[in-house]
Length: 334
Image 1 (cartoon, helix red, strand yellow):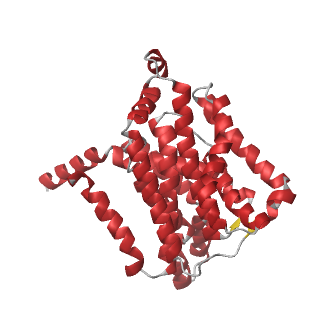
Image 2 (cartoon, one colour; image 1 turned 30 degrees about the vertical axis):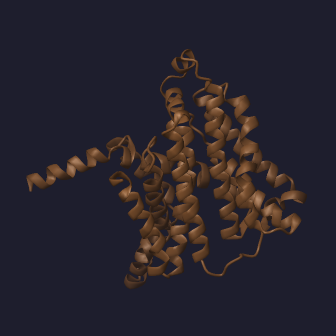
Image 3 (tube, helix red, strand yellow; image 1 turned 90 degrees about the vertical axis):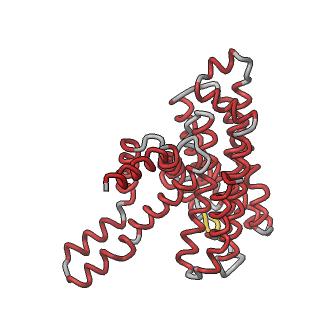
């Protein structure tokens, strides 16, 4: 019970957040954070626990987003039905791919996932009559307030983390880890490694597809370059896992919070600080620097990942005992 006390307190605080903070800007950031908890947890299952590094999260995310969008666009059904079927559409995309590509290992599988993402992106762009092509799909948002979207995102984040935590502590989770550590040894013990890699992929694809459906409902617009973006989706998912802690249950949540915060810091010019300095000083150099910084979030991501890999190679959650002991030594020295 004591072990679960902190997660329950955090969940209660998140549930109360919209009651305390009503500003739409902060609710928007929290919705993005919760969405990335779902995506990061899914990537962490296939890569962190099963050892199959994937660059294909955008393929599953985009599949779920288009499942929701096409329901509204072609069948005039509510895009919210996408939450029910978007995950299964992503699984349907991932299963044939996994059946073929899980016979490859290491970098070959990672490159195959990258190819899957690009195939789907170009297919969505070419099939204009079905997907709208580069024009994309636009739907009317169901709610004016962001609060309902927040609670849906919170429910999905909690459900994804609880389900994945249950899986990794059950028999499939031990098999996933055995595959990650030594696939040949796992096969020699009679473990059907192909089956369990497929199972891990199915679970990861499902939750990523659900997150894509949520994105469609929340943002109200998608196009191939948005939802099948290698950098904004696939690479971001990897960074969330690495920064938070690969192979840890709560790592993706920590990584999602940090990455969303860093992304917004650069996008907003450190929450308007550089823009303010530019106006206050009247300096063209400061204004130019502000514009450069707002587009340099990739640089910020790179610096953060390098620092984490050098100082905390297991991520923040994975190396938390090291962080805690470092602070303890500093307190004793003081």
